[in-house]
Length: 261
Image (cartoon, rainbow, N blue to C red; front, side, top):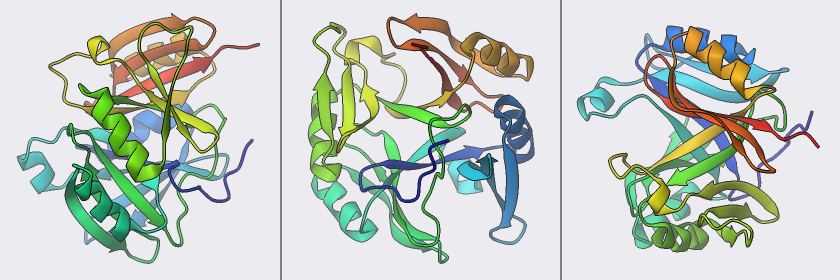
């Protein structure tokens, strides 16, 4: 069970679900992944639910605010990327062509964050850790193992994220699809599918993948609990098996079953 003591800059360090029915979402994900959960008070009448696997934080869920709904923002999973200085990273993101949706602000005494849209519009957050480092476990079933960036302009995304986080984008000579692997320092953390492989009617976004023991079983279980299949369980040659779903409130996520050696 690889425990994470600290996230290096550029690592995807936290995952947060914004939903319209927090209680139902908590029931869905704890059942699907075997998570436990802890509640933390926020503003009056609001709770922040942190999910855990084996006693370590894996992500969180909160109820969407009225202004988010009025803007037409759907339920979604947000990725957070670790930085040393949220103020500097936010300013730099804007200078590189991104849009600062929420300038850096303190989250009580647990960290400092900002919300950013990349040049194509895919939204993510940055996290300067204080008391809360982010996810505390990886490599276990029920933890996020990968993140894909769906964008109509991979070339611009490549320049933006490389300049902002130092990420490198690696092509696999054996893969003719044009898929780019994202590498933060020495660790592969995600990828960028070719623009030709995405639905042009879908807004640019980040998609997270949860590791599972059996993709087909987990997909069926999710559907039994009200999830909708967007892409059925499918093999990735020499990699594993994956599926894409929408939870009962409409947030998209993916499942991934690693290939056993």
